[in-house]
Image 1 (cartoon, one colour):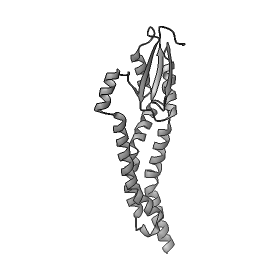
Image 2 (image 1 turned 90 degrees about the vertical axis):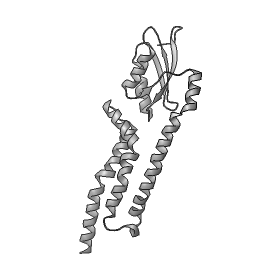
Image 3 (image 1 turned 180 degrees about the vertical axis):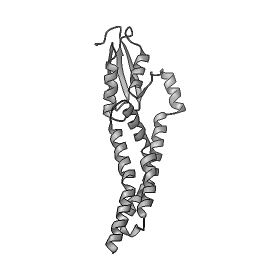
Image 4 (image 1 turned 45 degrees about the vertical axis):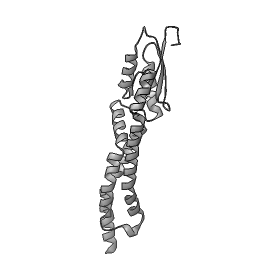
Length: 192
């Protein structure tokens, strides 16, 4: 669709995108709507949409974005935007939450790293303590990735979140207990 005098232009803020394939998926969905020409920019987290108001409405645009697992909102007026920015900045709240997850995960991971790399810190069954320290990192620290991977899985797609979620869960939970048993038995056999 080319821009016509009757077409309207709107920029939709999009939340929930974590990689360029997310932006691509949203853009394809929006462009399937009759009378819509859209581009989605992952870096700015916005969809720039030109649409024919006789063929579609803004609610259909929001519905299309939500149908692929992301959130969108119609832009606010300038005064409402200024008032909302004064009250609460959602980007700052999300950044603070991620920063807290990072700091706590790093604090729990450091002893695991040190015990694994420095033999003098290893004691009998140290691997079990490592697993106890790593479990919150894998589950709680990576929760935003697991949540996004699950949302994408429900839509039959895989993104970088899926890779991170699967990569973090497999070694963190799947290998710790067996490797600690194998290490204990190997040391016991070696001592004989």
